[in-house]
Length: 490
Image (tube, helix red, strand yellow):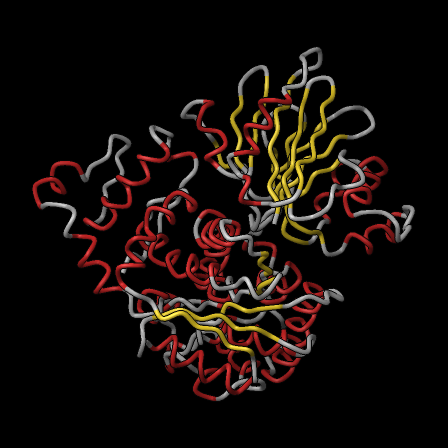
């Protein structure tokens, strides 16, 4: 739970401390304790967080880097246990240069200054943590969310994942996930792959707990991804809370109860009420910062899940399993390994302003600290070397095969092999909510106004309703620089 914001100006300008405080105020929901401000010649940087004031404000970070101590040992840097993570990052940058950021493993957006008063902005390769900026000849203004930057005009840009910016230059790519970077394993023995994957999944969960002694929860949909994560979290802590939402009788709630009973978790569920869900939409649009209809639909569940997650200080999510292991039904239609692999890489690279935007915004709106072990860098690297016929089996109509083989070691058979359902299907939202929303948009209004000035065509009345709310909060901001749209609408 953190947010960063700041203004980077050319040398000789006065620090804009009051302006940065205004940026932070717009994202005050991302932290409840402390503003950390650093003002020097040419720039002013700020952070709001749930944590105590950082010892070294030369580095402000939203997120966490899990291999920081390993990098210290590798580069022979002072490995004092008394150093904060921000101090360790600062020492690494000063000793090795900003190129060390490419070696960081974790979820982060960060701003750092070095000994020569250079300022760097960087974002993790997947884009788990958000970052936006406005750039002109004199300065760069940045923040964790779009709403902080609205007064700076309509040309707000998403800071690309895997990119680094020095001073007020343009972002430069330092890392990416490309199809050409991965060769399939020569061995295809299923048990060997499943054993290795099981071990790596455990490591991904363990490093995200890392001796943590507080209450730990899992957002549980009853699908294979979240259920497997819940089972693995249970290996490293004595008590696990699970949180589920849905209409009574919906497949998600029924499956989640099966998992909670099998694992013995402290299970908390919320039965959805159509009116409450409908009345939540404006709040979701404001925090989500998008009107993409499928994304908004799925965000409604995240909003409710976040609200009921207060029993746990950190919450695990199974987000990313469909992208990394090929869980979407369209993968079953692909006829070649090459097309499947390209589809997987494309899906992973699309997460940053779709599903990950949903997870980050709705969690931070309710002070929830989310961990995403299925998007661990080492796990992704390994998964993309697994032959595609171990992930997708079209003849049997099975996706995520190798992940399900791991899951059946921990979960009831009907959960490990449960079919893929989108949240709004599994939770029972789809028909009832869509009907209520469409009552607000007349046929003539939809026909006249569905084509936007930028060429985007609103896909149905539901999306028009979301779009009207989006414009209420975000005015004329140029959506082409900040939004992406889910292609598989239905």
